[in-house]
Length: 461
Image (tube, rainbow, N blue to C red; front, side, top):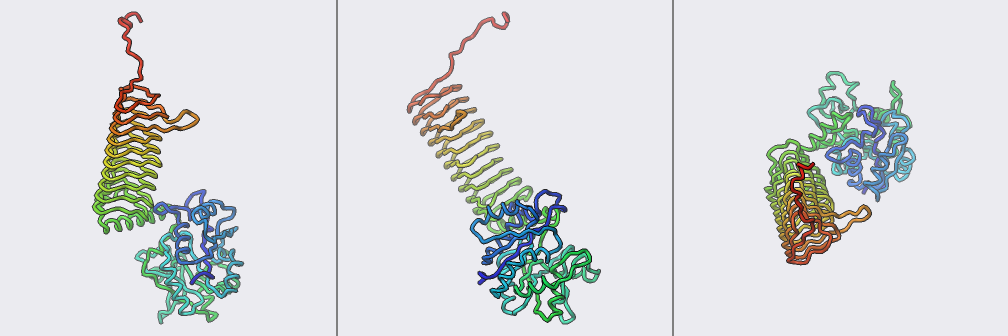
């Protein structure tokens, strides 16, 4: 439906109000830059051709978008000097001309309205086409309209214009229907606007002035009223970014509460979009759960736990845990103060105690690693017991090697397992040993110097 149409995303602002070296549209809302969310909405609406207007000499937005959307037809044009929204759109004049030749339409989006969605874009498009309008403005009702352009209507309730906050009198400021800053244009009507729009006193060319220009030339202009007022919300400074994040955070928490997840306190809980959590799982304060994480049912997550790119089974307990790019299976009991690094699989009913770190390892069912232990590049069997202070010595300074430990092995406290090394099923190591050779199954490996007591040594010293 939208294959010949064009989306222009305005992202040419510079970070003056944000006091940042980076473009404002890269500020994150629930872990995703605003420009990513807006671009994804345009792609989700089916628009095949996208132009992003960026600041002069910007590489940050280009790099981010190309990384996030490598297979989409997205081009970048620079706005050398920020001289208003219409001036930003003008930078895509050649793409607009191609669109006009195809008798298609152009969608104008703000790069800092992170909750704009594909559904709203498509619904507005359908109305725009069905009513054969030259311009359609997406609007919504908000309870706090301060800072936004107000939708002004005639006595007959016909759309008459958009008055920005700085130009509004006290009566207009009471209006709660506001413009989202998102527009559908017939491409030829947009060309007409860009060719005939007059600058304001400050030299800026603004798209809100397209409404009276088109009306005075007998062009069809109307609004599409969005029932979801979230699509309006944007940010001009860090304070508003924080407000967007708080709003998005609570919206996501409410979604999981309604789905049967127990979140007794929202303090420090951040659950990004795209997280799956099973019923009767409890999320405690201080937890950050990144997009794409899957958590089973009847778990206790937290307090103070961070999970990214991982899958967590049922009946799992994670207390003060950092888990990245790993799998934790049913019944595991982990923490406090545990780090699980990438490419790790923690088996069913495994216990990892305080100050344990696991990296690139497989730990099988029922194994216990209680405290102060590092397990790296290892394959550990079932029901293994690790004594306090065990280290798998996996790095020579040039290469990394693996350690293999069989089922029912018992690792004595303060053991160093110097990889590559294997311990057979039921093997033991004596406390304080540095194991450099394989230990056969059901055998005891001892690798330590014999104790020597020097009597009277202190007195002589």
